[in-house]
Length: 376
Ligand SMILES: Cc1ncc(COP(=O)(O)O)c(C=O)c1O
Image (cartoon, rainbow, N blue to C red; front, side):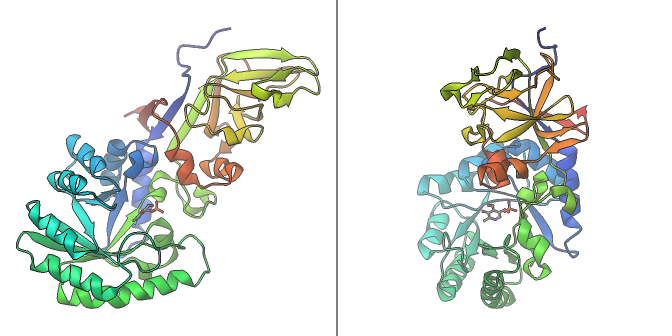
């Protein structure tokens, strides 16, 4: 039997209504007046930046953030004109691109403020490194000098003061509170001097963990895609996974005991069985670490992925009297019948985080957008 007309080799279905609802759900955590910035870097964590941005804005986000200048330019190119922050480090060329896109940028050195001014001006958020140890200055006095430089430059606007938490997703650790205190001690007096600035620190985990971290704006990535910031079941926090990854059964093969499937013969049948071949592989972002280490849903059942994940195919043990047929849909992330495979489950198998699972879906996988099943 061949595949039906709706079978797709590899497909990521993204429910934009779920993103909208996740944003609305996260807004319920926020006191009135706290704004929500949707983080749509890395192509919206693999979901599609422009589509995710529009859905997030429809759900109540009023800001967008990306990591790179080109990501900002792409959003503007798509006609998205919401306030936009480029959070990452910028080379002079990238700074020009970000400012040309009308995006706000992040500064922690006075030279950088000079460069913004020299490029014709723009809006600057000053970053204190309160403990993440990546970008920003560790020195509150320097951060204040940078802020004053921005406030004092004719064509530069001091728009914000920010930091980023290292351990917000590790509940119960004390470091989160120390970072929060360090940031508040620097940023609150700065805001007294410059009442128009927005203070922001919290990612998804911090937002769910502690209202004291919300300040004026929260920067939410993972949660708006319905992924759990603590790596647990998203549904338990009323987050709805927006992305499903599927393929189909392209071939079904009887294996006698001793016969094998895939490179390196990493699966050798111990009993008579069948393998179903799904034409999706690490060339799509299904990581090779899932070799003999994942389940797939076919016909509403969980079946074991067996053998080596190759670039374009994986194989699944379909049993002695095969319970699947060629053309059947196979779900690698998502729901079928009563069964569910989350990005968190895949992440646990790979000893990584859900972020990496969806960000790791490659461009070869078409993204198809819908709203609760209706074409979007
Ligand atoms: C500076 C900054 N803020 C906010 C976020 C959003 O974090 P999350 O996806 O955990 O909500 C990120 C993402 O890594 C980030 O780098």
